[in-house]
Image 1 (tube, rainbow, N blue to C red):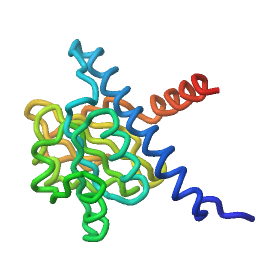
Image 2 (image 1 turned 135 degrees about the vertical axis):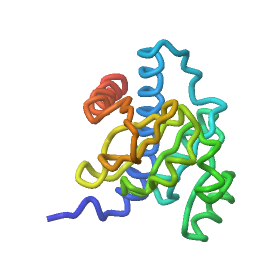
Image 3 (image 1 turned 120 degrees about the vertical axis):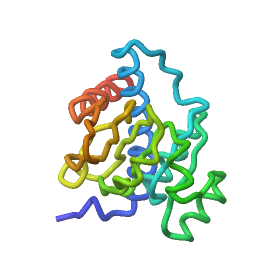
Length: 186
């Protein structure tokens, strides 16, 4: 038996490049579909502020691909060496308290769905989208949430009191997008 998930090629290439790119594109697609469904105009990734929580291989990939599409990227990372790496890669590195209030899109790239806490959700502006990149279906909800007027959101089934989450894309949307990408490329 070969443990592919522990192979360096999985971490160094698939997580960094494959997951980073596919998550950024899936998030952008979901936001565009949501905007069209509610009659808003989607502005695209260019010029938006993305906060990437976690700067491991998936976080690096998400930050790079979002920046390549013109997003201003801020990284939130507890490990000071990884935060320093983010700075050297050209991104801002801030605390959640500094980064979340100005974010348009927040991406948890730690593989853990509850990285953004209830207190973190309260810092978000109206219309901020929150997504989980990477992880597995057993430990993360594959849903992108958007904070709406007067509502507080918290990931998964744990909600801030009196709130209603607004899911704008779920697992089936992500699977459909993955099939579309494969058709385009192959």
